[in-house]
Length: 276
Image (cartoon, rainbow, N blue to C red; front, side, top):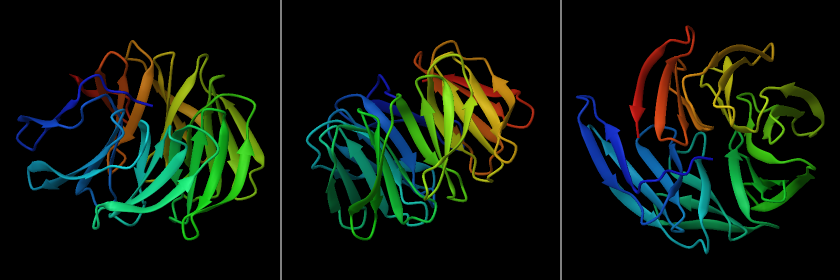
């Protein structure tokens, strides 16, 4: 996952003017936009979650969620509800928050220190992974575990596909493991990278998914054929985080040297590169 070295986040408005936000008192581990694109959340080593509101060209801090007893390592918004957010923490809990009430809707105790989390496309299930490579599937309505899967290899990031019938995991062996869902039966193992496969992201159109690796490569995969169609090799350090644009036409990738590369998905050409 990405851990940014600055606590002040920079972003560009429509006039390409740089604005800065004082986000946290320690490293930011995760950022995510909500489903309607009006809120941005950030989770930090300082144990808090901040929610920012985008109003026209101005972004301002709206809420700060407190309650976790350890670092907030990853977060994600509900795929359809723009007010609900879930966080994973090293304090062995998962917390669901409501941006309308400024408090946790639920706290779910887990078996280990949590490092990755994702929400199913239909919003009914949350999957959380811990440092011991145990994946727990939580029913959103009951806030209880409904399935667990222990792995014998390093799991870095997890994600459902857009249809919700397959579950993807990236591994320390450089592979992408694909399981059926909800059966959790292994279907495919893709040999994606010669080094640790760190992150995975699906494009909004459901045509591609991308993976980032310690080999400094970002790979683009065809969802239907499960073949690598393109690689992006402009970064020089491990690729820690990925994000597709809302229309799936651009892919942003970021590495440990604070460089963000933005590429055209179909051609592979560089759109821009910024030093974070």
